[in-house]
Image 1: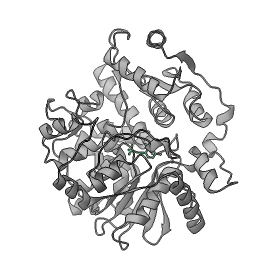
Image 2: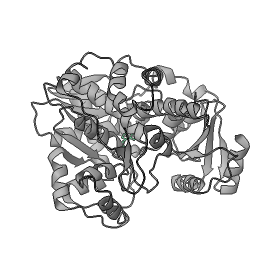
Image 3: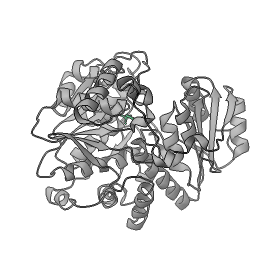
Image 4: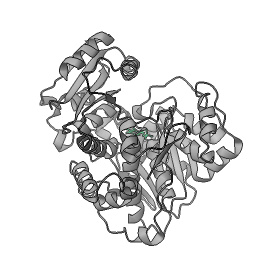
Length: 462
Ligand SMILES: *Cc1c(COP(=O)(O)O)cnc(C)c1O
């Protein structure tokens, strides 16, 4: 299988090439030249598979030319053996035809583990086959960093440097990163804010001459194709348990960069019967405005109670636009030149999107109310991101006779502020495998917001 860029000006590339490259050379995002399709019979035959078997089956067509069956099997097994629930992605019923799929049983208690546990294993294998070593560098405002570190901590061919803003992430978030004492893991607490961290990472990618010979930087951000691919699997897992392929199953997805919900769109393209995908946003509602009113203007970032969805633009949305524009790379390149300003989509494109996607916005007050209502009505404790998805499902579901699955993207203990606002006095103990988090040894380097100093630290660490 070949992969092409959404902007049409980069050469087609293999699976291994796109995974290691991240972004395409023309600034676009890679998508499969042709999406693999499963017949109804093939999907019916997946019923009863456990998560690992299903992951192999769903991902195989994408990787068949680059990985042997044994290699893929090994990757998937190792990626998901770190999860703390035997079902990996269990379903919980809240109401008639209303379900939550818990995606927070991985090592960092958020759904990003599904992609990053797999990506770490995959990187390591591809690099071993090439005899290469790379340096992963990333900035985090708290959450993605720990998932990336957990994904790479056992990788022999990767060193990972994660920058977080010094004293501006919660103690739980910091400790989830800094208590990983593997030799290849480096946490940098930068004396600045998250934007400074991001700027530092961007500049480092632009000029990598500070690295020792033979080393290069790679990113593990949410535009990486392998991350999206790994997320397709749990849509199949949920739908198969709720009656697919005989029945259509719908999803409501707390959305930031549009990676998670795009995986649902791909699952549908591969043959899964999905009739409605709900884009649930917080006050950073560019996607909701775009889908409901064709308003894709940038607004200043608002810091919300659901910080993992605080975005100004959604990078993976470009992948959907590519399809909606008839896979015309020139049209997308043209559109993206207006990213900073008022990107206006063609009216028929918005209409086409509306056939499948609905959207809903929930602000902080609505989030707190949703956590409270869900708890009172069902006894279920939802984290703020998940609560936004459940609320959006209640507001926009089209067919109450079809199962609706709300993706639970984080464990409530990760976001105690919102939960305590909603349910005052609620105790939130850490899950057992993190119970001693506050006693564990930490290791991190506090560095000034100075590129020379950061680069010197990195070069000397390698
Ligand atoms: C990253 C994240 C999201 C948003 O997912 P996208 O793929 O960026 O749309 C939602 N909830 C949580 C808890 C997250 O960590």
